[in-house]
Structures are given as C-alpha cells and as structure tokens.
Length: 422
Image (cartoon, rainbow, N blue to C red; front, side, top):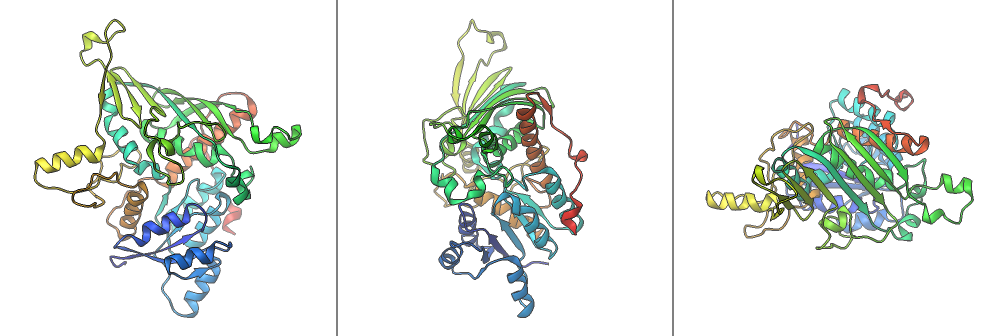
C-alpha cells in the first residue's frame, strides 16, 4: 500500500510540533508533507522546513482534491488538548494514520470515541507518551527483576514553569481546555508508572497551593488551573506508591531535568531519584540507575550494610554484547507494548563509534513509520494505554473534589460521545 517513504504532516507550530517536524525531516524513510497551523508562527515554521503551509485540514484536503494530489500517509497532531479528537476524527475519515500528542483529549468519553473510530476504519493510532521510548525508562524496566518482588514506588515531578509559558498559550490556564499540571504533566508520569508496574487501581490526591492564583477571589481561586498535587497510588498487583507533582516550585527533580530529554529544560547531571523503586531484594534509583542491594539472602536485614551498584543503560550494555559477538548494531529496540511483551529487534542506527543516548522522539517516530509501513503490527502506546492514564487523571481530579480515594474505572465502562460522530 505504501512505498518505503511515509509522507507525514505535522499539525501545530507551538513547542512540540517543530520538534516532531525536525525528527521527520532527518529520517531517510519519512517525508515532511506540510505544516498545518493557523497561528502567526505557522509561516515561519513551514518556511524553515521548506514545506507548504495550510491553515487547517479542510484547506489541505480541498487542495489535494482540486489538484489530484495524494493525501499524506500519516499525521502528527501537536495542538491544544481539546482539539485532538476533532482533528483525529477528520484525518481518520480520510484514512490518515495518527500519532497524537497526549492526552487524546481532556475527557475519557471523547478519547474512547477516537479509539473506536480508528479501529473501525483500520487507522493506526499511536499516542505520544514518548517517555516509554526514553532509554532511562527502557533501562529501568529491563532491571526491575533485580529488585525481587516490587513492593512500592516513590516519584517526583517538580519544577517551575515561567510566566510566559502561560501567556504564550492561554489554553494552558483553562480547566475546560485541558490546562493545569495534572493533565499536561502528571499524565506522563502516570503512564510511565503504569507501563512499569501495570494498571493503577485506586488513587487519593490532595491539591497543592495555587501560588499563581493567591491574589484571586475564592471563586476565581477555585476555577484557576491546578499547580500540582500529592498522590497515593495502589496498583492492581498490590504495589503501592506516592507521587508529588508541581509546576511551581524550584527543584531539579523532574523527568526533563534528570534525563535531559527536553532541550528547553537544562539537564541536571546530579539530579537522582525522581523515581525510587523499592523491592524485596533491592531498591533502584532513577534516572541515575543506582541499584542498592544485599545480594545474599542471609544478609538482607538492617544489621548488614547495603551495597550499591551502578547499572549500565540498555544501549551501553547492548553495545558491549554486540562488540563481543563482532556483530555491531547501534541504538536500541523500541520498547515493549502494554501489557509487557518481549522487545523487538528494531534498532535506530547511530554513528558507528557513538554511545550517544537514543532520542525518544526518534524511537517513537521509528515505531510510527514501521506501523504505517506494516513492519510492526502491535502499537506500543495504544489509545487504550493512553486512556488508562487519562482515567487515572480523572480519578485524581475526582479525589481532589470529593476528598476521598477513587477507584480508577475500567475502559469498558466508558461510553463514546455520539455527538462527535454527527
């Protein structure tokens, strides 16, 4: 159906869209088809990549129909959260495969609508929880067995967003449009935790003080978007955990600062332990990959010292094995889908002498292109995976409103939004 080159449009010229576009243009088997964006940034972004600009999807499809131009094979949707489902439904109706930035939408019903529709028209839907493709997360998942029985997890995502982050995109300050640290940021970590430990069964959350809204009236304070929360979590397999999320404190303990994943957030090499995973045989600190253990069963008590061991990242240890076998391949496999399955052998090639960490966006795009070409069939962050993370967020918000723990509902209990299909 497709040639070995996949044509891709990027919708959105804000923070994430151009990052996606830059990865597309650097791939030998992908072609940036166009930028779709109606903002003032659109023309300069399209010009920088040397591709056409369309103000909206209707304009693009009308142009294609008028001049008998083939539709793009795939689309990356990097627009405000509340626009994801309408755009996705429009594209899927034309047979265009989708990589949609998280969350699929601000609510579960709309998200399930898009999932069900894509399934019905045989359109691939990959959701941009790209941290599943991060080498730190892949390496963490690979080393969990060294902890024995995982008992508990402690997590942190804490930093301070600048004021112009909210001024640039007003939707980030709107509850109705999907703003706030919980839906924009915490959802990433909840997806990470469910990818590592399985589905969350129950949550309890307490909202943090809203510093940006401190001068507002009581009613306006309540309506202001959240700045984070403190959570307790219980997973379906019995693992328990705590998590602190804040976008308005001074701290290096966040995924971005600890891994260097986001180029706009300075990398902090000393930031250790934004996740700590506690097991019967040891504890693993992430992203520093420090393993604390007592190897001999007879020594596992507080009466004996705890040893520490620096673990290698997946791509480093894989490189050593391949060099020994004299069959050097570079990069790392894309991660397992959910539920856990054995990693595939699809690698993103790197320079022959490089130990550079693979880039999550590259690995995610690698997987997306392979899905479109039919080289992979199992979506490694499916709409259902993303919906589970969103259902956790909705349970967090309900817990905040009620002051009570909340059971995370099953996907099967969610109804679709029929009005979106009219």
